[in-house]
Length: 502
Image (tube, rainbow, N blue to C red; front, side, top):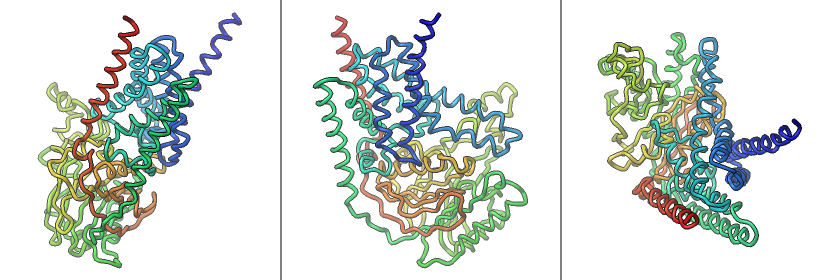
């Protein structure tokens, strides 16, 4: 019996190292931004496939890397269940387990693909570059997608992040993995050459970013007031608090400003009264705005259907336009196939019966007097690069309204802000962001936060509006260029595999 026990110890240690690699790799994400720690952690994670015995072991190691990474970057998912802990708190560990184990499957699948394509330790590590890029791309699209904390996001705030203006977020994943893989794939003299290659890739991308960041940002001469009411989630919808939070937003809107305002922005579901022209709400908002266009999050209904919307009202309190959120949160805002269930008499989950939100028609640009064309993004729509680029016409400004109060003071609001910063870089557009409890911010078209309100503080932020840049390469092409790169990578690996087996 001693021999089997001793044999288990190295396997347990390797499993622990894989899990630890994923956990440390998360240090590159907000709020830490320790890219210099995350990059070698990814290199170590890729190295784990070198001596995997078979597909099963490769899959398990990849899954463990993914589990550690997702656990460290997505643990905030438990927070909404504790807003009403007595009723929903028991669900929290199951939700976390489901998210961690489910998303980690993408990582496990990448390791399986890389193991199958690679006929040796070097090619297996290199194969993880396109394999993990493919599965990260899958995270953005499969089952409506959830590309939270993509591997390339570790560069937010660093010059290298500017490369996403050309290659996009998934190209940034590919670049990051290429640098990490070159650090560990080879041994001996090959290691020196590969290491030099990693340094060159890092240097070229960083150099491009530094050069790009030297360009001055033109100003529009306009000012946006971003309102942050700081309505805690457990109080936000209480009948005795609804009027208080509405009045707080009116007061923040009406307070004096050192310079003329051109736009006022309130967060997601800023008011609890619903969108109705028959109420006095619009008149009160227009009076507080003093002739300045006001954009605010609100629920609206058409028949029995409800929408999570953004509305714009003008100087006279008249409606300038609305946008309905089209990328809804599964099980949070609607139940998948809920409308189908109503066909067999189960209407409790049917959005068409008012039980959940219905999706809007898609990305839509709104014209706002004095500002130009704005593209609204409601809550987590800002984490989908493909949604930001899906509008029929180019906007002058991205607007994000969100309610991150569900997640308290966790890492989630900081990571959510980073997603908006990457969208700014990719599109070359400024972002005005109003978050109920924070972090509200003005972001320039290079992804830099030029003004912000901290989390958990009520206030009004008057921020100068930067001018948009010319359309970036990524804004013109979207995710399409990454596909031929992946095809070429997989084709070369497949040819090498065939040659070695022939």
